[in-house]
Amino acid sequence: MWIDAAQGIDIDWGEVFTLAARPVVADCIRRGWQVHFDCDCPPTQLQVKVPVLQATLYRVMHGFAQAVRPGGFIVAVSSAEALPQDPGLLQLDLRLASSDALPPPQWPAGTAALDAFVHRRQRPWGLPGLRSDSTRLLNGAEGRAHHVMFHARLVVPGRLQPADADARGAMAWLVAAPPHPGAPLAARLQRLGWQTRRFESCTAALQALGDGQPMPARVVVLESQADTADEALRLWQALPAGTQRMFGVLSGSATIVRQQHRPELHLHVVPVSANELLLATRALHGDGPPGDPPTLLPQLAVPQVLVVDDDETNRIVAGALLAHAGFDAVLVPGGLEAIAACERQPPQAVLMDIDMHPMDGFETTRQLQALQRVGRLAPFPILAATAGQYDDDRVAAAGMAGLITKPLSLPVLQQELVRVLKGSLARR
Image 1: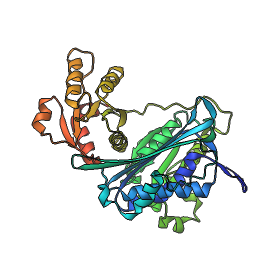
Image 2: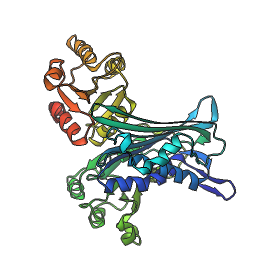
Image 3: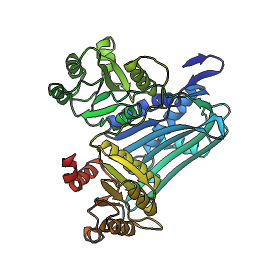
Image 4: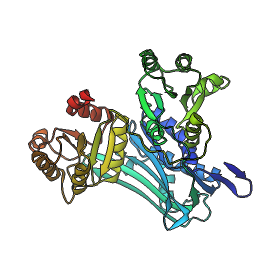
């Protein structure tokens, strides 16, 4: 980053988004909520007044969290891309979503700032030269479930930076016990060319070190009640000297104060920023000249699940939950798109909404199974996911393998997918 007192700072969008999200993520997790945080964009450079932008992002995310039911699931994702018609402009997208929200009449006073922002009564983005801005807050009911999504799209002066970091297939281990499943961090590392392997405890990672398998190039431990700083240090001692180490703690963790003078712990605040991941990846092979952009390496033993839902909020939440459950998600908005996606690459399972238009989930299931019967598609189970009033008998009669009621929950989703995929998972 380059500081100019008069003009502000040329800063990466993902960096300021991460800094603003850290206290909100920490607060939600400490209150028993689950959070999926992901910034899917290459490095960017845009001119902003950082304190103003960071404060605005924080207020938006904090206000959104107030609308979510206690114990719910929040998805916070952001991206940036260059506009083909004008290379000097970037489109920034920020989406906050939850399918387990409070009904709007029950939203507390903390959501007022969010509502004011959406209705243009408060827009201090601190982005000079803002050319267009489309912001919306969607809320609605589906059966007994309420969902809410905030979507901000901004077009601002800026440019993308070269993707000059590639891990070239190096292995990263993630030690992440609930409430830190580690799925978003794994995906971010994979985009930089890392292979990833997940463990639920430092003890499990230590046991894997003794199995004679190749040593990882990077090990990340996310703090939990079981995986403390002492446990991380015990794991560090068993690693070769050249292995990268990171002990991730939530913003406001007491560990930051207690361990700040212990550089051997390699302490970082999570969510980890894009710059931290880039620097760690560059350090693997030195700071050589940029090569081809890193490609997303196939992660072994990760079943693919197709999500079919005509509601954008539900798709975003389902995709995040599947990532936390250890699955790769493909998202489509309707039945015709589902058939086309299955013909391109059959998934291991389908999560099918029922109440869709123009083709509902029952008809989509019938057409997919007809293609399976004539051999055009490999067999795969289809699970219904709905907030409507449908019983198990009707779902079974339609050829579906089970019924999951919305709002989706991580334990139920994981349990049902393991049930219907038990044989195929065992073969992987």
